[in-house]
Image 1 (cartoon, rainbow, N blue to C red):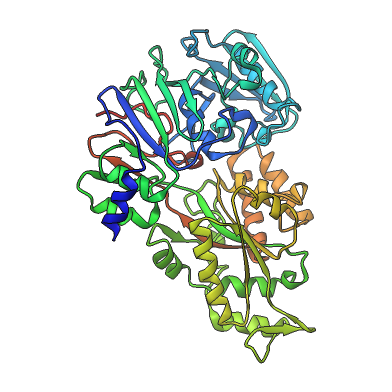
Image 2 (tube, rainbow, N blue to C red):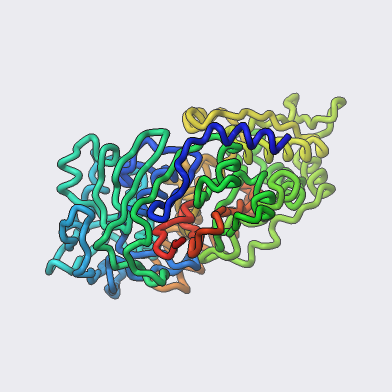
Length: 520
């Protein structure tokens, strides 16, 4: 049956065989545009990273900023002024010379209220940007920001060309866009394909790559293939060189296929969690939240539902992530009998139908999540585990086009997303600061200590202080069981073996990143 299905799916994929001059990549979803200032969308970010550069790159370890457009930097004693020394040999795809003015323009545009940049916070609270000379930028902050360099590796902080922005106007990122990256934007047919071409002048690749440029191919053709079975069929038949969106349920087949190689991005921080809206009476008691978290079997879920393409998550921050606190490791201990005892203690008694009740209300929390394969199957598995302790999850899946709107309505007790992040501070400042209520702090967690520790971690002037305060936050929110961490989702890259040098990168679900070492 699988062979028949894949053969039928193959007929849906239309693509010319790969040539020596063209690299072919496949992804499952397109983006509304390719202007990184105006989105948080992963399907935008992976393409932006190919044709635009950042001041700083992220090394393979997922935690170390390394020079890129900025060849060096220094920080003032008070942590408020960073001085970046820029490369003087960089040009945009248009041929325009890259200078400090491009850096200043890009960050001013990002912070412009008209742009409404959802990730503008990643650049810190900028007080002033100055260019003492064409290849020096003084980046002054209102307050210290301990993760500035890490955040500057993100696609939203890429450098733009003012001339391109102004020339294209509302069509910027749609009909064209300029960058200093190893690839140049050539064309985009929405929901069909993006075509990039080689930036022949490029020679400033970051030290993490052996090849500093230019890339080895004349063109990069990225096809949008939404159907899972079609992507599997296309890779199995050799139509495409590489994909980072190979369906998890077929990874074992890809590993067994003689023409394919499967490589996991390591490290990789993608947490699938379920959060509790603690202002809702049904989940306001942390004993109830802990009971749900410890009543499930994460290893079974990882193996049975994700087919081994995920690791059980017992902490909200991955052990490999920057500033993970090892002391949080033993807070979540799976124990179904303790889960039952906690619910008894909290006053939720088992009713005649097996569902717990309290004050005439059944323990039936409403659960919202995006209707994708992972979230849906995991939610159903958890629903089964929780029924064994008298909890009846009422599942409400939503299409990805309306899920954010439905979650914004606040009419639920539990929700789930899979979140990519860079570090402990990156994850916690987004989700646990009370300033971010009602979203993304959907827990409605408002705690003075948490806010204070987050602020001290953000403004720390040394690694020890940053780690100390972020550890305090992790310990507190874990002991409050605000989230149920479930799985750290693997991110696998599948490539045809005719391709070499395609090491996957973990940054924001990208894997391909720059592709400088890829060759055939």
